[in-house]
Image (cartoon, rainbow over all chains, first blue to last red; front, side):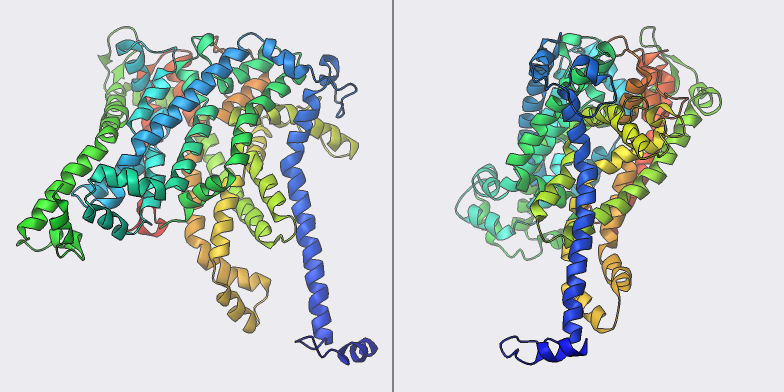
Length: 301
Length: 335
């Protein structure tokens, strides 16, 4: 120890801190920390990623092999990903899912922005009560109101078995989207809006020309969340679509897959990964907006 | 629009002016009335939504909870019969309540601890941070149905890869989703896999802790644990509270994963036939929302009883929501 100390500390004129034993200990400590942190990171990454790997490997096995406890495919049966679309209904479910997700997302965004703007930027009596109502709706378990809603859609409107009971409510504002947009709108200084009004813009023009460009990140986050919500929705389709297999979405149809074709874990896993794919692809294209959105839900205020 | 004159008037704190003093300038009062009108116009779609998709069904649920109704014959008033039936006679209500409570306590606690751990880890990782962040986040994106089916396959007691590996290592091989003692822990494992949302929230909160406080604590001789206890924890406490309360509310709604896991593990055919009876194995995955579905839609079309369970769920959810609306949790923003 002492020899290294003299050897090291002698010629260090350029380094700002003298290389003492304490310094070396600190460097070693940092290296050990680095190793510990990254080993933990790799262990965690295995926990999060291995399930995907196993699902993927199984999706490429032959019918017989997918029933065994083997982990690695003997033959790589890529045709599983073609054959899975030959399962009756599977193609229709995709069409329905896309329809539900796209319509639901567009309607939610269009109807939620004005409400969020009003709640964030106008001062009017009942504003606080309205905000509490939004939060209550956001936190309401869907099962609380499902029975009367089902009766309404079935007995009065006769729309059960179509996607309309799932989509139409989204034209009237979604509480979570309103909440998230409002949180973001609160960060926009009022001066911008005032300036627009001085320039002679009405409220609607101000919203469209001045506010909308500024809240683009929040709008994309809301759109993404809603797209994922529609794509993943299971409870809604189970209530409103179960009677009519032609109207099923992939998220609902998928759960019948294994039971109906239960010799074929390989096809089930191929279908499972295909259902995950759009969400993950969309995420990679819009990662930043999405992470910002998640942060916004929890950290504001 | 003639808003310019009102807008340029003396309005440093327009909202305060409205609240207290009676002599409000006419221009200001006109401005307020105009703002209310515009606000109502902007809010109108949502107000309709609130009335039709929230207030009406909620009142209707209360109404039906005092009715006998099978969905076909006209409803008839039965007083509190549905309530006593659910609270004393229904064989699944208390099982579902116990399971939901179990999930609320265990799942939320473990998710917060694990989320905090993963969030801390990701702030410490220097090399390949982008890769690790994406890897940790990805499972959260997996659609719940797909993730649950995937886990039902991975944890299949006979042929699943997990038990295969455990067997090779000479470790015990649990029955996972097929064993009443392991089914809920398996659901917790699935919930921990999808920790991405909490990871991001905690990561942001941890990066917001002022570094000077850590430096000051280090100068005072605080070790890593003391720094966590006296600097990190107080700073991120509001976020932990937020995570706990929203976690509780989410877990009260726990439905899809329990339903799909039970169904796939039991091997029951489902879909339009709706043959899967919730709770497999041995009632261990019954949750309160599933009971609403079961009573209202599945077996006996007992709409009155379903509405009673709905209201129990409503009271629980609103109790925790009111916690969130307290100032500390910060949901109401800048009021």
